[in-house]
Image 1 (cartoon, rainbow, N blue to C red):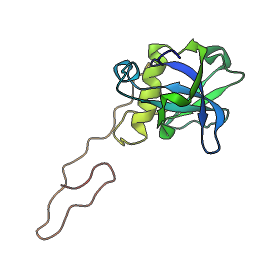
Image 2 (cartoon, rainbow, N blue to C red; image 1 turned 60 degrees about the vertical axis):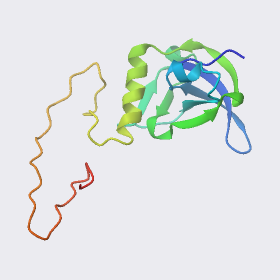
Image 3 (cartoon, rainbow, N blue to C red; image 1 turned 45 degrees about the vertical axis):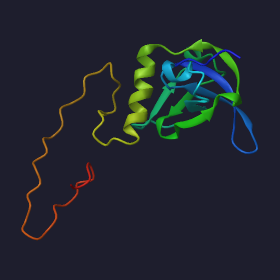
Length: 149
């Protein structure tokens, strides 16, 4: 089997019992090509999706898959290389991989850029955050963006 590379689309066995599924390799090639690491990071493709900060939509011509496809950054997972069955013919562009990486980042980083736009568009400036005031004996309120120190 060829070593998977970042941006490639593969067929893999996912789940229990295993089902054949298209997946996108998102881990860096230093990891993917290593003989000492038996896993890759993937995001599975879905035939359904809705616009959100963690979802990227792909037309069929871009992926080579039978229809419109979606990857959900919040579904990134570690996958053993042994369950990768076959590589598809298409490889995603560096620009599209940056969009996928940002969707993954937005799944855990509330400060990641998103205004309903992709990286090729400039984000709208957001409101500045004022530093939390500390009242004697009370902890500052968490605004949901960062944990209090």
